[in-house]
Amino acid sequence: MADLHALIPDASAAWREIPALADVEADRLAATVLHPKEPWWRRRCCAKALDGRVPTDHVDALEALVHDETLESELRGAVLLALASRPRDARRDRLRDHLRHLGRQPKLPWGMDVAVLEAWSRLADPEAVPLLARLAHDPWTGRRELGLRCLARVREDLGDAGVLAGLGVRSVGALRTCPEVAYRRLALLLEPDDVVWALADPDPSIAKLALPRLTTWTLRQHVQVAPAGTPEWRATLWALVGLEAAGKDVLEPWMALEDATVVVDGLPPDVRQAVLREHAPGERGTDPRWILEARVMPGPEADEEALLAAAVAAIASLGPGEPLSAGAYHRQGGGTYSVVPVPDGDVRVSTLGPFATGHPAASPLLEAAGFRWIDETLGKLVVPGLCVYFFGSRDPLSVADLLFYWQD
Image 1: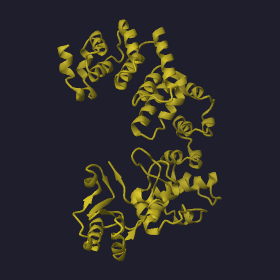
Image 2: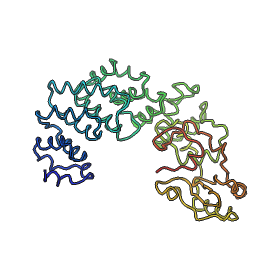
Image 3: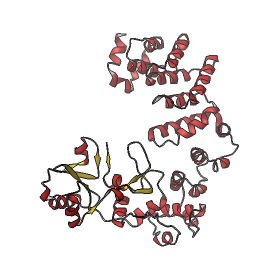
Image 4: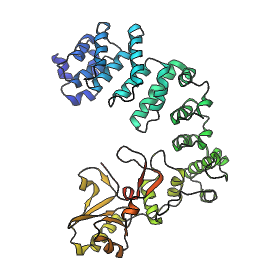
């Protein structure tokens, strides 16, 4: 085992590609994978190197390892992929049945779910297609790209007809009206040249995907005055987003629409502009009206250093300490505010504009200096339709979270 230990000396090596493992005999790799006293990361690395050359004599033992839920999911997943690379036989069909069972589980360990789907895709099983379609629509980029690669593999093996059969439909057109967004996204993949319908889709992510494939001429044909909330109204909004991105003036047709902007009662115009300038277009679920407003009517740029200096000067009577950026305050990450220590608390000064919150004693001082004090009522106001990434979620946030944003 000495040479394998040298090739994979520590856990960090297990996450790198090690071409020399291709020269190690498959039996030795399999023996290492199955050795319970070897660290899981070395076993995982050897399992990856077994891809396409699993020794027949070790298949049953490797399958047993996959079933062992006490083992790390990274190891089990790598073994699954190796087993799925074997030629078709009765034991490979047995693996397919196990993957079907795992695919029906409501929750699998982190990473194991994608390993199951990747292995399943290698078996060209139509039953995997619905889950692969959902993976290809995942909000996380890495998972989404894996889903797209897996779908491409299944599509190559089964053809478009087989993929559609796995979803229970006979044509791509039928996917466009499916209630599941992931299936409608798949329609864009299967017919990449016929995407105009997506402009009117109720889910913003579908229209956003279609925009780069449409010409300005086509987009202009879909600009019309239509009742708010209708498919034609949605198509017009997205067409205007695409035209604006192409450098066209869209202010007049945009303002001619009903409900051209998102109404948020209680949201001051200066806060609205600052939030949009920083956070639009946000995540893929963002309402196109926010995207248009941010692009067509951007708010003024903020002078972060001047704002902080003015805030510190305004609260000089409180004896402020040295300001810290959001990242320095939390000792990691970054954000859109600075923290100014004061006796019995602190004051948070936004970098997006003259906005502050924190210790109540600072409120009248900062307001007198021209700052807007973000009290609890305004701070809790959620800005609907503006989807912003925040610790794994991609939903609309409150004014306080948007003005005083931090992400590690």
